[in-house]
Image (cartoon, rainbow over all chains, first blue to last red):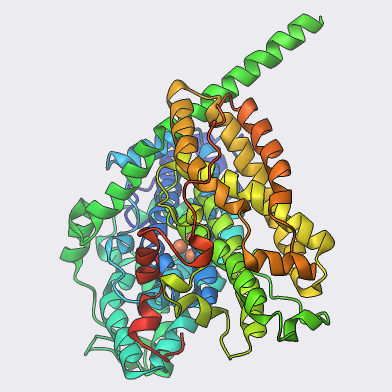
Length: 332
Length: 273
Ligand SMILES: [Fe+2]
Ligand SMILES: [Fe+2]
Ligand SMILES: [Fe+2]
């Protein structure tokens, strides 16, 4: 998902827990929300920082593939909708960095880790957006996959994260709808538009499936995250749900999903489908995807080019505070 | 998404819209209003995802979004006045550079954040006083209505731009130098905002728009106050060096903006998006 490979500890059995840990686990099991001032195991805090941080970084880097088409949007209305959508994503980044800050890590620290490559963002944003139908495919498939993951996370145990998810989910369904609306225009448009739509489908299908992270059998330590309710469903469960919902939508559009093994399985009441190429996934995560260099390079450049701007504002703010202090001293 | 509102459905009665004798000038003037918003919106949107800090990314996208909204209103009315079946999209996407009527100031490359914010400030200060006049005094109810809607957003843009000009001008040595450089670069393009021609004269005559020269004093006051607080030096020259955008004589930059902006409409004529 937006947090695809979050390292966490091996799960602890009840006997191995300290009394504090046991009381904490009881609260989580009872569905209580953990708040910033509450006691929490260090592993819980660290895992959450990684997960929320990855999620926040994904929102921020996620501006870039769609930002790529704002100046080329084909109508004023599409341009306005796309701008509003990308603006929402930046807002999501803001909510999530704020949620992470309640765990004692600053936005600047997290950004430093993103820029130095120590923290990751979702693999999906390392794929290029090559034609206008990609704006449809991103909204429909990428935001669609994000929703699959984020809806259950509204019930996550950590209060600030849960509340951020509730705000974000309200906007995500609009993102998916605007994507599908672009896809409809393209799929039912001229032959050239239909070709773009199919091309976008072909390129985004497997990367969208990768968003849910590796298969459960290769997914390390997700049991502890699930016990802590910072992960609600397994990767494979969510991927299956996504495929089940997406296939009929693609059929309605008259688009072919690029998977010869895709077939309805009556017994499991779901589709059978091919796994994405996991070696490609791990290459992308390592930094060798089609756009890793461009995406991270853009973010680093924006940050470095903006240093004088941030310094200017800080210097002004410090001087203003100094003036206020001097004035209050003089008044005494 | 709250920013995307659908336009009010009831349209006020406006005899100017169908006034044939006024048509060519009114159409030109509306294109000037719409094109300024469109081209400045385009330049502002180029920052998307590349701002110096997350809050600026959001604010810049928001400003661009407002300006695209204004474009839809002004060019929509321009198409109605012209009466030849062109809507806002046709005007935005299917005119070539010499038919564009924006000021040269708004088409210059976005530069760094100093150029971006100084340009926005100089233009907003003009835009604000112009829209205020239009909202209060225009004899065209349609123009007054659009101006009133746009004014709410533009007064916010002006507040934000003024605030940043002050803080960056009076920030560090480097931010001060960048802001002064930006001002010196852009100043020579600022005079065009106040140079009227026969189109402006016809609009003033009809009571639709103000005499541009009359806005100059208020603009200068706004600009002088902010620059003073920002510890920036107002250039001594009159600022009329670069002009012609309003008549369709542009810089080399506009052609590239349009090549990018109009690409899909030009490459796939007649498709619906
Ligand atoms: Fe988002
Ligand atoms: Fe997203
Ligand atoms: Fe989204």
